[in-house]
Length: 149
Image (cartoon, rainbow, N blue to C red; front, top):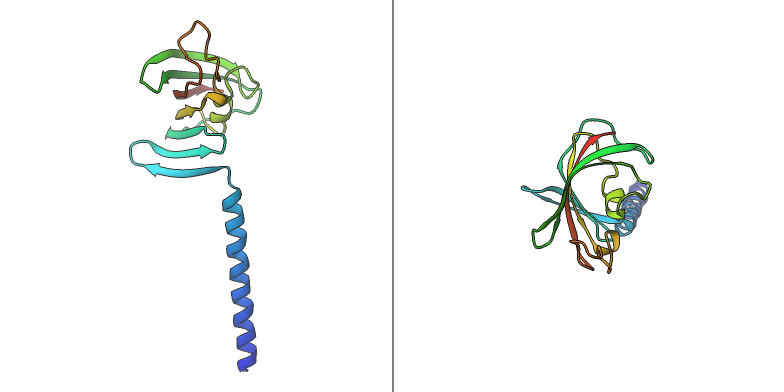
């Protein structure tokens, strides 16, 4: 009887150990991390450096690639200077806007609001906007509200 319970204990320990190893592998392969602050909501940092903070969860439809969407946005440089703002319509996830927007709006629902911190590689890169307000290698800060899908 003692031998049976010892085998059962070894088997249970092995199962738990395998489960922990599997969890460690999944966590190590995740492409983002999550942190929470009271003032900003939950922030996801993707492997490519894009930071996504949900300010307000929406309750409406979530866009699929190719859907025409309407957003209201405010774009700032890291020094706080607003370089653009307004409403815009575009086909979602079709390359009509900077990559940081296509990636940063995924999973968002109508009525939702997000802050995006977009690294240069997902924005305007080393060129910036020639003759425009965005310098080369600029990290961009956007507040985006999804108005319609």
